[in-house]
Each structure stands twice: as C-alpha cells, then as structure tokens.
Length: 208
Image (cartoon, rainbow, N blue to C red; front, side):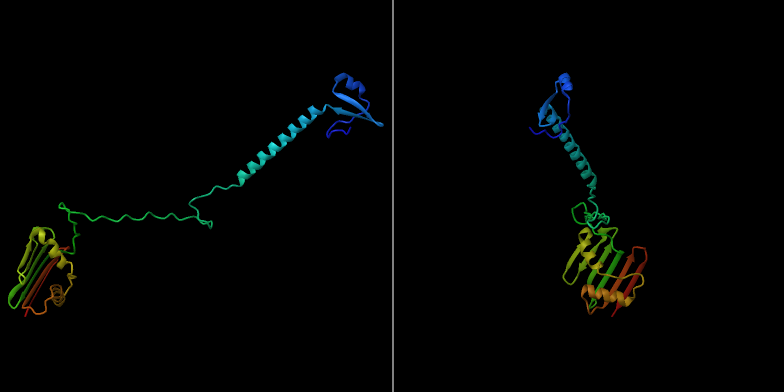
C-alpha cells in the first residue's frame, strides 16, 4: 500500500502507537511505514488549501480595485481638462403694451415734424412725439387719409425710423432723406425739424 502525500514516515513507533491509537504500523519489506489516519489528515489538507485559495482571491480583488482609477465625466478624452460650456442665452421677449401690442424701443428722436408741399399745396404732414403719443399725427393729403393719436404711432414711427439725421447733418442731407422716404421728386416746400434724445433740436426748410 502506497503512502498518502503528507503522511508522516516513522520507524519503530510501536510503543507510541499503542499510547495514542492514532498510528498503524505496516511492514513493507524492510521498511516500517506509519500512516496518520487518512480521513483526518486529508480533510485538514483540503481546508488549508481552501484557505490559501480564498486569501489569494481576496488579494487579487483588492489589487484590481486599486488599479481602477476614478473617471471624471468633465475630462476630455485626450487627458486635457474639459472646458465647461456656458449655458446658451435665453432669447429676450419684447415688452408688450396693455392692449397686447409689442412695445417699440425709443429711437434717437424725441420729436420729429415734417411738412411737404407740392405745387403750393399740402401734400404730407407728419408729427412724432415719443413722450406724448397722443400728439402723433400723419396726414396724406394726396390720398385724403389721416390718422392721429396712439393709432398713428406705428405709422409715424415707420417713417421716422428711416431717418439717419443727427446734430451734425446738413440741410442737403435732411432734404434728400425726406424726399427719398416719401418718394417725392418735385416739391415747392419741405420743412424738417427734429429733437434728439440729448435735447438738441435741428430745423431745416427748403423752398423752390
């Protein structure tokens, strides 16, 4: 009978075997082989191996966790810090008046008065007042139409917004702009006066 791995070999232990009863003596040729009870030793051996495997697994798992580096969602893939993008600006909503109409921002003119005569007769009259809109007025004598007050504001403003006159504008520039805006070539008189936001006032008159 071949000895199991890990078994203790001994010779001349008959007296010891008699005392503890844990060893059996076999004679094989000129050898005396002592075997520890097989079941107890094999069970202990398996438990020892299981403990070693469990410890190795725990060590490997710990090493694997150490190698895992925390990821940063804000980092770029090339290793450079990601730049935080600013939030898109929200579009501004134009203000509305009490009657639901969109309010228009004040232009560079506080007041504008324009009078155009053709063939010696009234052709167009325009009065614009940014502060007191009840004074706004537009008269088209050629087509016999008239609009006044708040209702005239948008109509008057559509003409005024085409002007690019300032405190340094010349008479020729003012007359030319009025002709272009009202599509007038021949006239007998054009009067233009405007008050700027800084309070300065400019007046021009051209007769033909």
